[in-house]
Structures are given as C-alpha cells and as structure tokens.
Image (cartoon, rainbow, N blue to C red):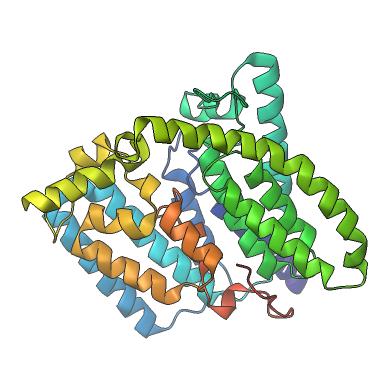
Length: 361
C-alpha cells in the first residue's frame, strides 16, 4: 500500500513540477508574484526521494551568505537578490532529483489558456486571464497593418508567453524524445504570439521537422511542410516587415527596447556607471533592461556580481545556436528557473530511460 502511494506521489511530482516551473512568474491571487516560487521550493524540498549531501548544504549556505551580503550593500535590490537565491536552489534541486518529467499536463493547461485568450479577445476586446491576474491586458499592437492583437495566455505579455512556450519546447525535446508532438505544440504556441521569439520558434519547428524527415514516415510530411510553409510564412513576413519599418523610421537608439543599452553606454562613457554594483533601482525601473537578454541585462543590474552569475550560467548551459539566441536576444531573465532548466546541459534533467535527441539549433 505504501509503495503504491509512493508511486502515485512520484507520478504527481513528475508532472506538477514542470507545471509550476512554467507558471513561475505568474502571480497567485492573494499570494502575489512570490507565491509559486515559494510553493515550488517547498514542493521540491519535501520530495521523498531528495538526498542532499552535507557539502551541497554548506555550498548553498555560502551562496546565501554572499546573497545577504549583497542585500546589505544594496538593500533596494532585496526582492531581485532573493529571487536569484531561489533560482539557484531550485535549479540545483532539479539536478539532484532524477525524474521522468512529464510536460504534457502543462501543455494542456497552456493550450486551454491560449484558446481562452483568443476567445475573450474576440468576444470581449481584452485578454481575460492577464486582466484578472495583472489588472491589464497588453494585447494591442500599435502601428502594424497586419495584426491588431496578440494572445498572452496566462502571462502579462505575448512575448512572455512566447518565451516560456519556447523554453518548454526545448525541455520537451529531452523529456519526451519519443513524443515530438509535445515539443511541436509548445513551439506552435510560441509561434503565434508574434513576438521577438517567433523567429526562434519557427527555426526550432523547422529543425524538429527535419529530424522527422530522416525517417521513412517523415517522407510523407514533405508535401505538408512545403504547402504549410507558404501559408504560415506570409503573415509572419508581413508582421515583421511592418515592425522593422517602424524601427527604421524611429531609429534603433530611440526604440524602447534599446534605451537601457544606450543609457548604460553613455554612463560608461562618462565614467558614471558603477562597475561593482550596477545600476540603481530607480534606473532599472525607468528603463526596460530585461528586453536585452540575461547576458547583457544581468551585469547592468548587478555589476560584477552579475558578471560572475552569468559565467556560472553559461558554464552550465548546453551550447547551441538556439540557446545562445535566447540568452542574447530575448526577454529571458536570469531569475527564472525555467531558463536554467531548459538550457542546462546536465544529464540529470533528462529522462533516464530515453536517449537524448540532438539539440537543434
């Protein structure tokens, strides 16, 4: 009886953990943005199969001590630094726990949320879930002749949804190597957000289809791929040509996405940028730093500590064109554990029974 309950508990954890990771940045009513992070930490720490060595405890306490030292130096960055400590703990716990992760329940949740987004945008004129969770619906697209709205699912912005679905797709390739449709559906949801990761999602879909074409059954997909490409690529071409024309008219230096980078370069040129501590919180709140990608934004926010953290992250990362593009050119943030998990090269994050497929890109 106990063994049966243990198996059921283990199965629940195998799909609940990816679900919580995919919702890591989504606020819970009554608990706010810190609700899911703390629930996920408790969920992992209470896993009956968890076995932590003393040396790992000592190392983590050392990291926590360093984190609190940074908080004492920069108390206004308390929330960000606490979130980083949680990310380090979560990513390490996920390495220790060998699991056959199931990303399929999370897939059904996000597919349902995407459908609700589309239906409420058409019927009500706003995105219901973001309006309920965040108090606003950022679905509108300004100065674009092709699209007038985009879906956000359970996230604040379409670009945030697109990034999370792309990361889940990468993780699904290694958690479900025999069920490529899981990764394809995640990539498809990323594709239809018409965000900065749309091109990366299209690239990944093409790569995954090419892997299928290596098999005999995949040969049957060739006509579908050729016909589908023409139907799918035209709307994306129209959308991004409008977007590029807008950037070209305003100038990249005036685009909101690059204001933080231009400001930082000016500060460095004037010798006023703090290389050890990074920007002050009021500057971080004034400009959109996260749009620059974690490799660029993290050192700007944390200074030398951010450089060291990025070096640790890159040392753990599975090097591929897709992963490099994600950390260099998307809105991914270093304090999101899904980024660490999806791009990690650690084998313990993959299913033990299945072989790992080649990473695309």
